[in-house]
Length: 254
Image (tube, rainbow, N blue to C red):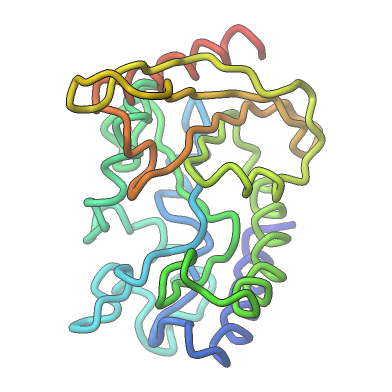
């Protein structure tokens, strides 16, 4: 499916979600975050994955502060909408959250903002719709309604983007939402025994990988549980080490 058709699916999902009080409005669905052309032209195509966009993407004082090109009726034009998404990390990104993923990406010589060899995109597995309250505090009916559109849209998006590495930092239960054919079992490739403050962990923090078949291509999925932020209980140094381990696993298994 083309990206333009995916945009139409995302817009319809947002229209249905807008009937629910949890949907952040005014706003738009966020199909992905980042520079699409730079991602496609990168030597390594990397996607990161969360659950759904934060309500902070559309701040009360200026809802389209982070997506100025998406404001107004013109923002629904597919070309302008995609331009707005692609400009996100060069506009006013929610850096307090994305910087946590950025350290992991740096270990793969990738980044969101184009200052490394490869440019990554961010996606959300449950829904492209920002909500208030956050996903974990939504009622069951709201979650199920948003996921009805969001899961299939995320799968179609990955089939179109053909990522080589997919880094997920979510609760383990959401791994069940991955409906691609698994080609291997999950395997630990990085183990952090110390916390970000240097103290010993009660339990080691493991980063695991598994190969999946995404539209006929091998794609390495890397998983680490989330805290308040992606891979949030790892130190910046360990995030970079984990990123390097993921890259090595991809090189060894491709």
